[in-house]
Length: 379
Image (cartoon, rainbow, N blue to C red; front, top):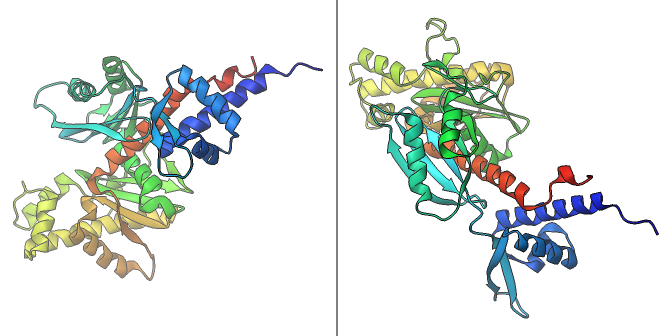
């Protein structure tokens, strides 16, 4: 009889091991019977793979199932010392950190404004260090959402120009792990696509107002970044009578609108919208202009991409601005029907997206170390 090939057996163990690890990450502690149901594997296969995973400290006992009939069955879970990923949302004034385990659960959070003078890489790293001090396990990867254009190689292009990947490299060196940089609005769009209002949409455009107006574009269920990362920079879409290249909506624009309408230019966009909700006539006029500009930007996107819906996030989800957008959209409905819905996550959407992406990156990193590599299966 011919001797069975080793390659396919190694590949089978790889696939079965990944299937069990992914099931434990998705569902939490499970019995062997539950793992059989989740993965479709036989009891023998589940037992063999768990024995292998226990030997690499990938899984650990997690109590006993006493809820089902029959003899009590032991549960297993991902080993608590597998390590963590850092999800980071950076805005213009602060950094928000969430330390995530392989199940996607947030174990600890940290948030602090950037110092007036200081290095933002060191500030972010110190916040992550403080999170790690309260848990037990190494940091394997970080996903960082930032405002600005992010290129395919992790470079950031913002008001100071392109950084050539310097931020990513410096943070990776400081943390001692790989760092992935993403545009913050793209992360918010991924959050909506996975677990938010976009989960049941084939295509949508997320319009997020937070300091500036950004867009996250999803086409046929996939995030569209564009060739150089510019896709979604809707704040600079041409609008009459604004000059080409002028920002459509954002903090600087609203300060100018406040001066025109006799309101305090130092108030935030939310404060102006709250005043409009309270009946302030000047604030109502400002909200109407903001709604007009946002809707025209959406119309420009609609004429090119024709998404199923627009999701309003960040300050764009303020009820006053949502109503202002609806009124302007009604005026265009006969020529250009557009559907607007409100984000599921509000201003937290970029961090939610970073949490989801960092958990996925952590699983990919850790699980590849715990099971035989499929790349070596045929060797």
